[in-house]
Length: 273
Image (cartoon, rainbow, N blue to C red; front, side, top):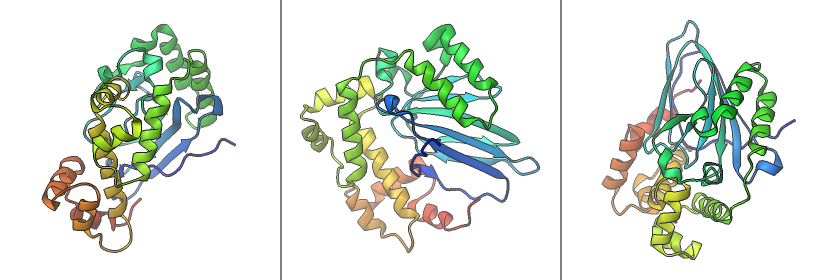
């Protein structure tokens, strides 16, 4: 049985009064793990129920997305939060690349995908269209079959491993593990690259700046702390995440999440689906 990935971060908690939901995440085969973070499935059955909106603060990654009735697509980075209203019955199957790891497949700057979704066929031609047809023809519950089909496609186009992708992922792992990293200058020191070189690397491979990445993961950290037991100490959290005053932290949090930290923490205490 294929191993499942760890619990996701960045999902905004929301209340649901009913319906059936499934969110599964699977690790890639070892030979593709350098490029792929995981495969994911989101399925819902809301027949007879009100629509439900799901939101996420995305990671700095490119995705393949396959959904019945829609063209298969390549999704670049979202600067803000991604929002989707679910209704009726449906399912989406996706592939999440590691940060920077789509650059060797694209053979061009990933910044050209930022804020965009493109048909898979636009980037991979008739082979991309054939993959979409094959994946979407499979049983929606056949997760492993869809994974194997997609992995075969990627293996046939697998590029050489790029040392810059490895560097970027070491930096991302460090940012996630160490909430005290709040400055690009410190990240440049860790990478042994100058700030301008680091900026160019992120634009080429990730599609956004290192400052954006740091801020995104610090807000992921804030979301995690908002859902822990007890009342979060927001002034202390704001300081620990690199904000010099709580007002700036609240402004950034509300701009991306749509609620203040206190409002989000209060809503998160409500029962979930």
